[in-house]
Image (cartoon, rainbow, N blue to C red; front, side, top):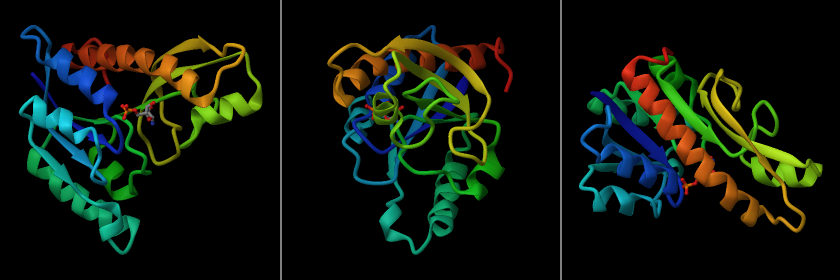
Length: 191
Ligand code: GRF
């Protein structure tokens, strides 16, 4: 059974989908803890599913590195097989990546390497492209620059706003994430 720690910053819809998938007896992975960099709304999903949660508030630390040190301590306490960044809106400090790579995956609301960074949906709209996408990648030291594990194209529709487009991307992200976790857990996908 593959053990997961999921890190979030926001509403945690991807987290919730993973929790639902993992609650099926046949699913080969379990979420053992959920972590956040702030008082994220998504922590409520962990509570609802009876999964332990921890918060390492980014703003409580003097530097990204200091925050990363505490994050490593929390992660080490759970010692997960895989870390899933599911809407964590922080660049992971190098120390965290060095300790867990390549066992860290991230979901991204664009077709990487197109539109990396914190505003993948907004940037695709601003560029006027007719299609964008969703990706699941291995996290490395860069910004959304690691190897792509799964991705899918999603059309940009006339009249799309950042919010309508993101709402269409997220279900695809969820599906890709669950599929990638499952394939890692069964050994079909090797990191
Ligand atoms: C997802 O689109 C993720 O890729 C992006 O932020 C969103 C998080 O959504 N970085 P949620 O918190 O899972 O609802």
